[in-house]
Length: 412
Image 1 (cartoon, rainbow, N blue to C red):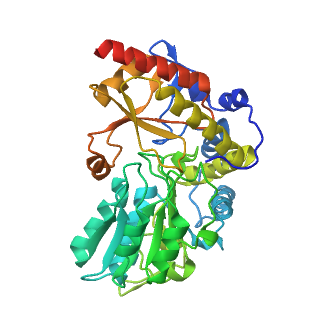
Image 2: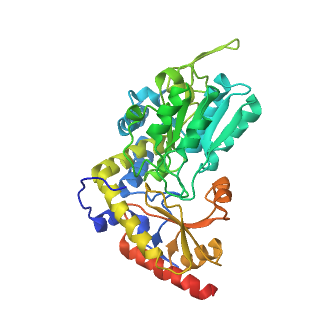
Image 3: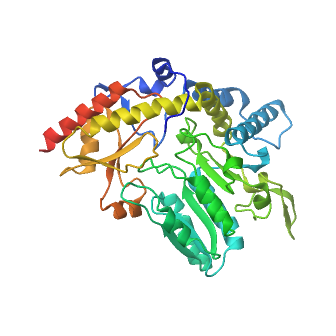
């Protein structure tokens, strides 16, 4: 989705910021089109990781020596940076997790167990990633809740009339993806949130695919929870974020027990820490949390509008180029999309497509993309997915088109 104003980016300079891109794969320059799975990391993030381990490596919050104080300060600075990035009201509403999946499980296991019971209903959509399906299924099995699914049309867009019909006084949680990882569809989450709140439901938004493409303002959205992973935002793996409204987080019990999430422990009883710490038991991924601030600074320096405009140009170029290939069918053609294209080639299995492209140095993702129910709805086993980021170019898309022509020749 292109924004009204933007500044053209120096893509060659941006590519130089990502060392991993400067390599040969199977004797060919790497084309990395698997950004929806994980983005590459700029030098600033890599340097932050190295700097922590070389100069500040210490456990946080409990030490009084210089290294511990420096590490703690940098750790909490990342919390404030994420607060600003999401537009949260206060830093204490930012909970560090191990990723999007972990964050969704945290809400299901704490808020869900506390407030949902037999007959209560949870709404998700057809296009959800497994990580936004399975935790709710587990909660339904445990608590006797009912899982309901918002249908989609053939273009990969939610059927909003059907969504409104599903909302009742029994609806307690609506948990939907902001951007589909398999289709690139941008969902109208503000509309979904407002309608859910009208029946008294709380809303969790899975923002794993949205944070690099779309400006996020959790207060403007008025979502109750928002979750994402750092590794899809040019940051490290194994680190994620749960945003939650203070009023909700304070009523939720801890999930994991151990150090840091306590105020006082005796053999008779334990009193729990305040938010955010009551949800952050044990030693966290300190270096990764610290480095995510550098990823956010990198995005802010480039500008979300500028990134979105470049990615929109790549999406438009790739859509036209790929549709020129006989027998190629794009899966998911929503009016509002980010830079993700999933497609199938008639008579050719997606895994064969991926293997032959890899032989040419082109990295794409193949399979069901952790969205098996979505694939069943679309009547396919899986797709080949090319997903673009700020460091990709139209020349690379041309290589993809030539690579797919070779796939067709080899598999004829």
